[in-house]
Length: 165
Image (cartoon, rainbow, N blue to C red; front, side):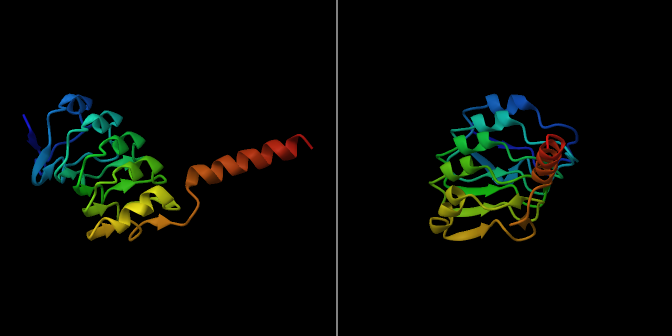
């Protein structure tokens, strides 16, 4: 199998990690792959980063109600040239610097309309010069703000410092 399209099928629950073993997949059907399902609050499995054969467009996980962090392992798909869509979910983390390894991207890199925070890593920002159309990263996110886990870490550090004084 070289193409996978199970988008818009009202699938619920966790995305099966076994999809990451389908290493012969090179593309997804028109806007399919895993988009438009009902994975409310579920996370993107790190195993999906093993789909390193995906080259021509179609990493579609938009509008699937996903939450949590963007796995750094997705940066392993360095041959992908078009259509990396994680937009319109509830992803709530900083953007992993490893996504900067998607250096072959020329069309449509979308992380917009999530709850992403912190700064866009320099490595990821560098992709914007090669993406001729469809660069959408900051819109609808909290880019430039401190992530919630960073606030908690800072509070713990302050409390630790003051309790040792």
